Image (tube, rainbow, N blue to C red; front, side):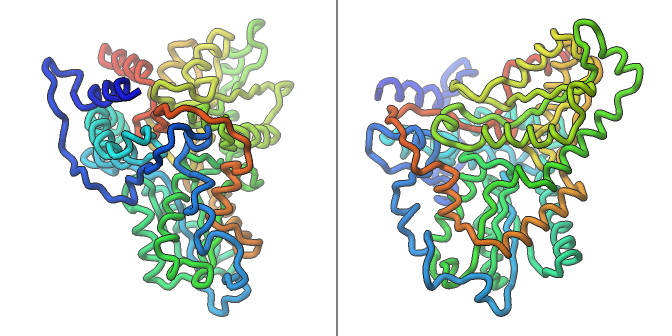
Length: 477
């Protein structure tokens, strides 16, 4: 085991593309602990759940903090005479310029939820993050350059926040302030909490902008909050501030309707000539929809992550609002953005597209189902790489349903979620983490094998062969 991992670390330490080995360096090895974390455990075996995520449900930090459970002294909304409402929107974050890419990747890979090292090697987490970010930055920067040089995710999140507040005020009479907490780039979650404290917020709704819960997205963001709340219980404790979490919202009628409406617009855009082209003896159904969801390692699902089940349920709900197969529309589901050597959720989008081409599909609407705003996975991976693959596979008439962005139905549903959360029984951060990581599940032990669980974020999770093929073909033109 030690020899094996020594070889792995040695491979990362040196640039394999150079004719001679050279140490890759550049970032300080003393990053902020809040974005590095670490695993101090010395056990040789973990449950599958612990192998898939840093959230150890048996850890005292998860279940024994003074604010983690119900308390007779806890503040409720009914107890607050002068509520100062805040809404904390959690999202991934992304580099705004090419210069930000390497730092963003560093924060990403320094997260033990993304790369989990065996306990003996966990002190090397920051070094491994440094090396991987150095090696991946040029390719990732190239991807961001293809969409304008940076991620638009912060711009969209700010617009969503502003419009949500306006809807809250106009439709419910609720004056609130919105805060944005990004996981891997500015503004970080810790910065948002500082502003929340400065503004004297005493009623906080925590809304992860991930419709479906996964331990790699919502779970990771909530873990940061968990740590910050534990460190500052005198500020965020249940006697000081009411808070409630909306852990997932894929099944809300407003969200489902907004996605279905955007898809229907794309379905309606096919011309009579395209519909005729897409109808044949081989393929009698003229229109097809491919929901492309962000992938996660299969080990997450085996460990109890609800993500896959929520994606499938979500697709069925949206499907019920769209034309049926008898009405000329067939629905498919796939998963994108895989990276690393481990098995991810199947079927893969880059496998499904050629298969649809072989089946004679000509008219296709691709839907980025797990994304609420445009960013690298929609604008580069889907719009450039997958579109290229679809055309190569004979899918002549490509459509892509936009992400929700500032869709009016979606914005109003965000406001509805906040209003509902303030009037319903609260769910604490700990309760949301435990419930969605299936804490009562019986899990068999597994050996400490590292998984690169990058969840394909930030332009580092697309299939390298697919990306390379698309770019090589572009260069030949």
